[in-house]
Image (tube, rainbow, N blue to C red; front, side, top):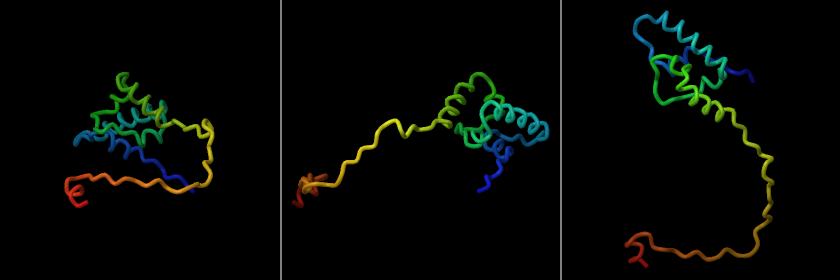
Length: 114
């Protein structure tokens, strides 16, 4: 199954507010910053990372202040659950009858209907 090609421009549109003027210089600068982030982390990670808001520039993400937040998100992105850590137990088949359950009234109407 061929993987879909990741579009870097769509990543920029999702993460950064695009200015109405000077787009050529803006895209050149932001693509350079995006490539720096992709070298530090990965392109697949940059495709899914979300901060809940858009930034003026990706320079915020390259800076030291948000590097820690990106590192935490990247570790969560790469976390693999060790399925062999805990043994799997088989409880077997069910034996005996079910215990009767008591119906407690949840409202005054239920209480008065009984």
